[in-house]
Amino acid sequence: QQQVKQSPQSLIVQKGGISIINCAYENTAFDYFPWYQQFPGKGPALLIAIRPDVSEKKEGRFTISFNKSAKQFSLHIMDSQPGDSATYFCAASKGLTGGGNKLTFGTGTQLKVEL
Amino acid sequence: DAGVTQSPTHLIKTRGQQVTLRCSPKSGHDTVSWYQQALGQGPQFIFQYYEEEERQRGNFPDRFSGHQFPNYSSELNVNALLLGDSALYLCASSLVGTKKETQYFGPGTRLLVL
Image (cartoon, rainbow over all chains, first blue to last red; front, side):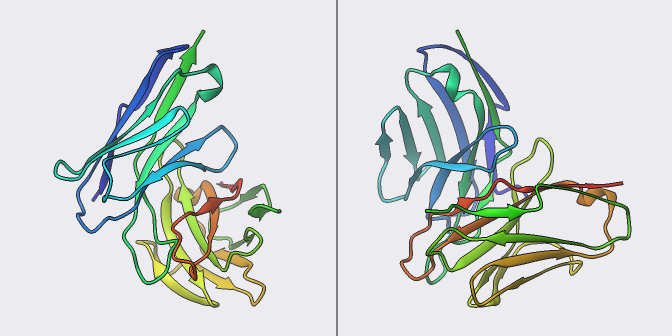
């Protein structure tokens, strides 16, 4: 059972454009939603994360929009650059006592930013 | 500040063999999680170790086992290797005590089973 569905599978954006990646989750117990960026041959790196008590979080060119009632969240990359070309994963977790809980990942979106 | 380190970087094994992968967490972290990432897929949670005990476990068979040492480093052992075990194995570290969710990933170990 895939608990986090991610789309699109791949995305091509022109330099300076906006990249949008969407995720939907099923488990309403999830309470932490991070986005990870992964370059070939590297491990995933945390980009930005949100909790369901806010609808939007912005860090630099990266914004997460969160819709709790629809059980959806999305990543927006403003002013996309060729260096942003990578695979992006959404994820979700639910809290046990303490932090660093099991992450359930989406299937990934391969982003290519063209000049 | 050293990040998460993993060894070896690459490994080739044959079916039926056993393998041990190693992970050192980010300085100051006390928890290690292991993930399996098949080609073109998102990482899948295997298990997590905290205070030298398995704290959470994903949907993986008993062939997958682990250990955490007093210095917080960890090992992932896979017995009776199958072709389908070929994947990138990722280690992530975090700090349970502060209730912060952030997990930092290492570069992974690429395992190929022939």
